Amino acid sequence: MTEPAAASAVRIDLPHGVKVTHRDVAANGARFHIAELGDGPLVMLLHGFPQFWWTWRHQLVALADAGYRAVAMDLRGVGGSDRTPRGYDPANLALDVTGVIRSLGEPDAALVGHDLGGYLAWTAAAMRPKLVRRLAVVSMPHPRRWRSAMLRDPRQTAASSYIWGFQRPWVPERQLTADDGALVGRLIREWSGPRLPDDEDVAAYQRAMCIPSTAHCAVEPYRWLVRSLARPDGIQFNRRMKRPVRVPTLHLHGSLDPVTRTRSAAGSGEYVEAPYRWRLFDGLGHFPHEEDPAAFSAELINWLKDPEPDR
Image (cartoon, rainbow, N blue to C red; front, side, top):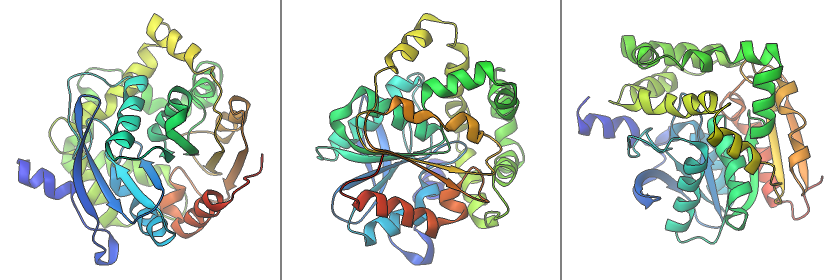
């Protein structure tokens, strides 16, 4: 895929012809692509695997209409952001996020993260609390809960079999890009609930994954998460995550999520020393923000506007 073709796969308009501002931002020694819409307090949206900023297309519009500056960034190595040879551990990826907040000239942001983006949102809130105004996490337990579930819960270990498969060299990259990214489409459909995504939306994710080097960069964070479990750097990171989150937190989860079990995610509030709200979406899978965007956006915006979110 040529550079212009790669850019056209990422810098796309929102549904119904809504124009979003695409630009690059320098932070933490790399360049990050963002899609931006609206004015007001900053809400930073972080995507998960196997996606890019496009996963937040519905929320960008809803947040902008509600009076927020909505910014969806591509994580390091994905979409329109730099594909660096290293830097895919969660501490550094979280510094990418907080660095972008600073580069945007904002004092802080409400962080909204899904899947891997949720893992990084938890991390950023613990590491750089002054830059995180509020925290909303989707389909991802607190890092310490995730580690415990992966090591002690056989059902969660089985549900996360794709992560164990990522530990092989080169094979996952080839599988993700084979047949124009067919595996990406299959994973998204299998991880969704009964409300399956549109073929056009799935095709956008497949095209983005086929941009050269993206597949490798997309699986590198998961390689670190597993390979570091018994290493000093992983043990040190786990200790750092004992630091409690001290900002209001909204935790969202789909009841039919086949990737992250509800039991694994529930209980993350023990690491939050602030108002914590748990919301389970009945009948939705791993992508509640895409499967029922209206209900998800309403829940998120009502919580953001609530001056005294409940514990």
